View 1 (cartoon, rainbow, N blue to C red):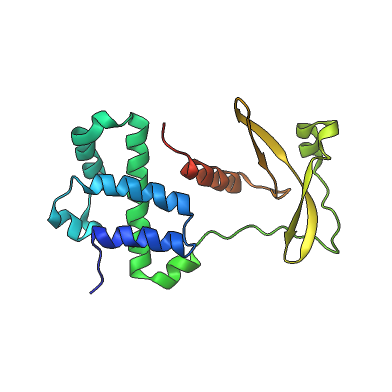
View 2 (cartoon, rainbow, N blue to C red):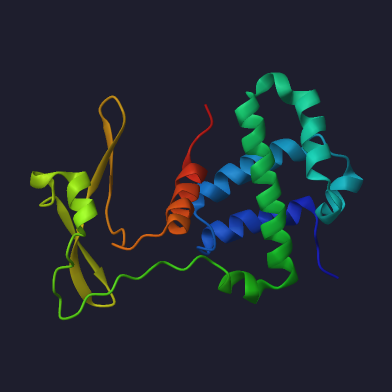
Length: 187
């Protein structure tokens, strides 16, 4: 019989990070949140996490430990518990399907090592002199130049994003946003 205990879920988060099934930082933040929440549960609830009502558990956690957290932190903890439980159950039910369900990296194509052209709408956003700010990106032994998008995030800190496909869809942009959001530390 498969083990769906809280302890197995925490071991899964370590395993997923170690084997590259999940970003290490994401696994660590999920484990911190889940471990904190599990402290308020009794042994019966911890023995099979498939039976957890996440909304009820978070409400109880907020009543017992809420003064230590901001509302945003509680929301983040709820999200991390929910996704951890969902991923763990999916993995435990079918490990091969879980591994295959990992997000695929969108591969940019270039032929004969030619530079990819920067689309006109991107050139306008970057400005006339800024299109020369590029980075060489190699995928499948093809090298091409990709524009770098500098994004100031706070005083003295600039994040640079490169390697975005010229035909990035809104759904792909949301996926990238979700990954970056998962890396953030709660205030």
